Length: 123
Image 1 (cartoon, rainbow, N blue to C red):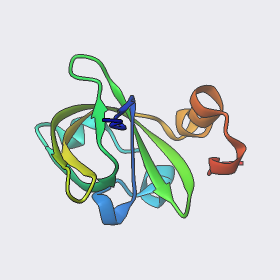
Image 2: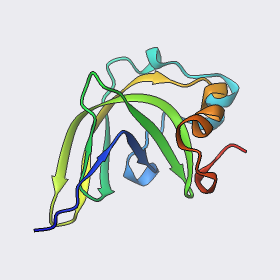
Image 3: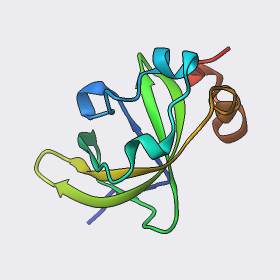
Image 4: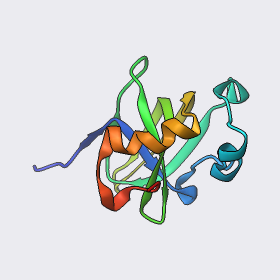
């Protein structure tokens, strides 16, 4: 007895866990990406520590890139599939992008959604 299960509305991952390489912040700040550029693309994440559940479609989850413990809010996703490894105590899965924030929205998202100064990427 005594299971710990997290219910999340945010998929916060780094490159090693599968944050999409196609989402380049440097590119996006110069020439904003559009969700249409990723139509029908399914992305995978892996080895997220802990057993986690995410909101199921049509409810959105936030996609956050973790860069050196600083969070970049990229937009909204639908988590399509989740797999739990109980021995390793990790969660993996698949998602699709449903909205990519503009650079201006990205800079405001942390303040509006999170408000944790320790994880704030844009200052």
